[in-house]
Amino acid sequence: MLLNFINTDLYERQGEALTNFKKTLPDTESELAQELTKDPYNFAFTGITKPYNERILKDALLGNISQFFLELGTGFAYVGKEFRLQIGQKEKFIDLLFYNLILSCYVVIEVKIGEFDFQDLGQLSGYVVACNHLLKKEGRDNPTIGLLICRQKDSLLAQYALEGSNLPLGISEYDLSKLYPEKIEGTMPTIEEIEMKLNNINKKM
Image (cartoon, rainbow, N blue to C red; front, side):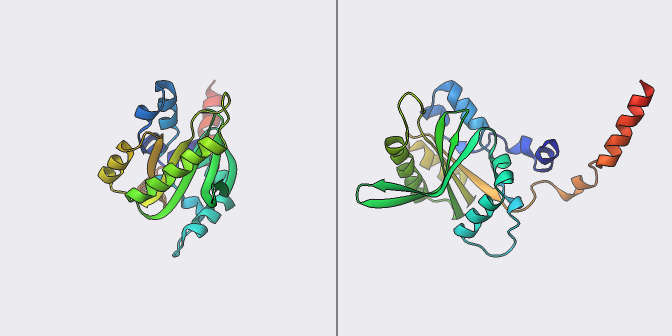
């Protein structure tokens, strides 16, 4: 796990999503929720190298669920993919629905393979409101959080969109390639080198 964090440059990505959590969540919850985000998310583990659509990406994420959970962070429990919501006479389907045990809330994740635009956040907002009405239980669950993970975003456009919402929402990008410079690979010690170093230390003690 430590090597994974180093290899994917976690320190630089942790808590970096654009969000409005400070405005929409209590102080302690907003800080914790922010720390659970990343920007960008590293989806290199999906192995996708050819042209793909949203369904292919979502299938690849869930096909590597252990790596996906590791990338999402602590406390996430999987609820469903294309999770069905009956809203009036309409059926709506959430891309990915999770529950975070630390925040005690549902987390709606929408995945977009294109560039972020205003209407994307409108769709996410609708799902968050619906979850609060249909799934959230009073006395058990905190307000639902929405996270949009897109291929690319204009930060100013994203910030304007977030300022226009009173729901706790975040916007991040994802990357399908390794997020650390290749030159670092040669400077990382091998497992054998680490073990040799530890053995030498033990002999001197």
